[in-house]
Image (cartoon, rainbow, N blue to C red; front, side, top):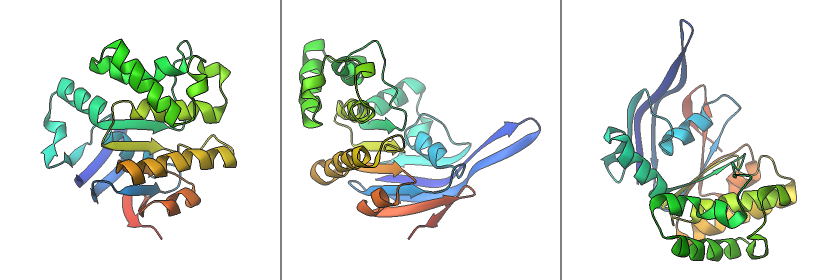
Length: 223
């Protein structure tokens, strides 16, 4: 269970304080799929970066199974992030000099798995997302949809409990976007991975178990 309590995020721009998130309270159940909707600038990406421990709140707490993780030292927090959370972003952030397989297994190598074990896991996951025939190809040799599937495979390599996706279909054509949606929804349904998706895509949001909206840094219930 993820619990957000009284969470705020602000930053200074010159002499002005910009409030991005304002005293949010939110519970996300284990195995739930949640869409976060809202216009650009509403704070959606900031929220998902804080959920992923890539950014820290200005105030408030983020509890994973009742553990207040922002009280941890950075090394422990980074290990938690690497093991428990998988990320899929609109811009897939693949390393261009490495192959599909090498990009996929990077988190496992960082964690300390042997190259052989990481490779075995990576090959299985790439086959699962339909890229078994593209393992040795570099990102520049892949379509946008294939690159995003590599990003999904990379997110799965450590068998995370949570996947956070920020506009995962934002740069894709409709047909390819549906394929990525299918993969994410199936992972949630079959593996019970908690899924949180920031999206403008109403059709994707409707496939998830719950939707919330962000407006002016605050949560409202989305239809």
